[in-house]
Image (tube, rainbow, N blue to C red; front, top):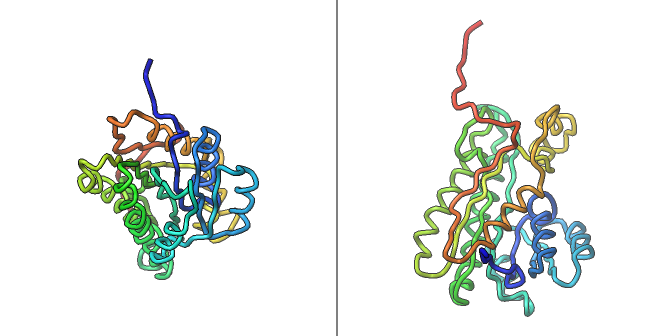
Length: 257
């Protein structure tokens, strides 16, 4: 019989756990018996998650854009939540869909600060402890946008290409350290993602999901958990996922009227 890792062995640190992939992943791990540290910026959402998941879940308000805050948060974790061996670096966002010449520069800056710097800070703060404890697993959350361009997705796609490449390079950095690294790359998934991208405009946020069946946060959470429970001699480098109704169109051709 194929032997997978029992999630009860896991202490899982999750960023961006107040909604979407992060919240669904926290639920899935606790359901499987793991301990979870769920972090994010919205205290009320975290309190609700804690009330739902109970004693196996520890929550804390955390902004991944603040490296010192991450270091302090990790240093202050109470036992048994201090022995982290799985990191889900999930925090990220897209803002706007304007062409590059028209974009609000602060949107670009926020995406870089969260998707790029936030990921760097999370890994740098958590990785030394996992190495010292003898091993672990880092799961980054990228996107199909890191491979396939689309109009208006320039900096968002670039940040997710960074996530992919950092994950691949991290594999080389941790060779011999018993650390696994996986990048999860979802496509069309119905969460609060579009509502954030379009800054609360419900009609714009609903448009990508109209008349189609997108993936949901539970689909992504299941893939994250699956990648971490495989035997320790197996490393899943990348998991690229799309809704069955979605495909990629690699070329966009401008035609004059």
